[in-house]
Image (cartoon, rainbow, N blue to C red):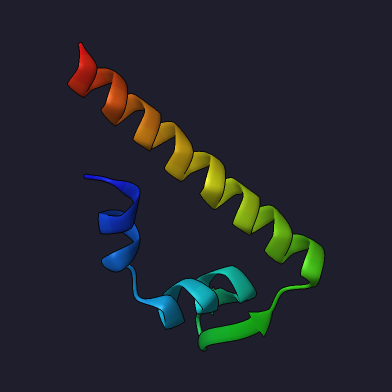
Length: 64
């Protein structure tokens, strides 16, 4: 599975919501809170590192 195939299967609005908002679960219900820009950048960078690592692992598995 290539990068293009991976990203074509991702719901853009869900990705944006996941990176920009945090859901806090409480006994009374869920609270949705916006994250600050530095937390959003950390989330974005973490996602990029994870995608790159999995793509490298896949390539290493296929080429062996």
